[in-house]
Image (cartoon, rainbow, N blue to C red; front, side, top):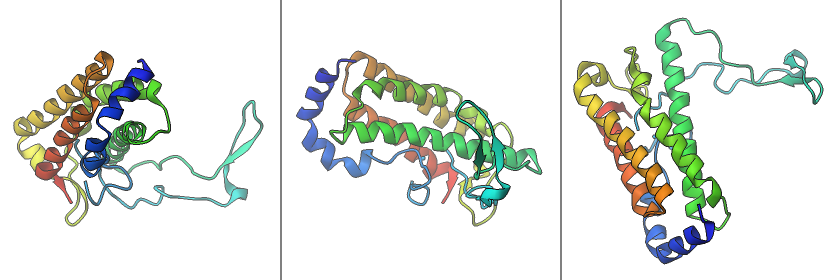
Length: 205
């Protein structure tokens, strides 16, 4: 991508972008946006591994070319059920989508640079979006009172598929828009719409 061309285009829409920042800046829910937002579902649960820290003396020792280092953030525990494992995989996958979207927003809404990585993030969103239905292959709704997937996802799979397919199509369209040097402002706005719509109908807040 030609970064000068990209910056010039953004300069023309800075006012509109700032005005719409509340609409565009936060999309697929991540750790910060879970209470407010996200495409699909970010399941919140309180497994001890989520923010686990272990004593340095008991940390798992990893070795490599930079010497031995203790990992104070152990990997996820073994899950008791496939539903728990899928819920965790889904939540982390949604966080990954959120990360790419927020990286795009940070690039477009600041002068911090990174225009050369816009296509990378857009392509990652498109790839993850194309596989979003795989995160719901096993019925794993959120427990009553917890944030996460609603049972409606599995009760009305044909209807839910309309949402996931729409997000997949829109994320692919946005990646192509970046490639073509098109209108990223409206493209990002359009992509976020499908996240919000899906959450409104299929996510327990």
